[in-house]
Length: 170
Image (tube, rainbow, N blue to C red; front, side, top):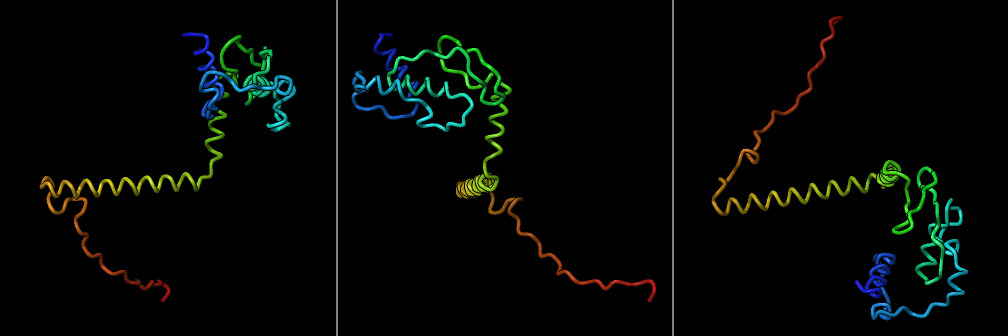
């Protein structure tokens, strides 16, 4: 892989799903004022109350073309334990798989439960519609009779009546 192609792929990984400008698609980055980029910090964009802004400072400055030293250690987002950073690759967010899993579970259970229930009900309704359409197609092909065991009409239930209580004292 050529150096230019490697830079483009690295840029795409760093930008994620962001759309790239037309200049960067052609292979040359737009001119960036490096003095301005070196003065920026994540506190200009992110919450200043975050415990470890170095992760965001590094990524933000690197994206904007500033020459930045890679941090040697970072803190785990979940347990605040120190993490040794490898010389290459993505910056670690969690110190272990268990911290990553706990963070995932917290995010999962913080979703509104009514929204999850609505999704489940909608999924069930869609499945029922699909089942109904499939049965109709099978009936048209003659593979299934007019009524099946699951669709037999129910017999009329007897009407409920009130039973008077009998007191032994009376």
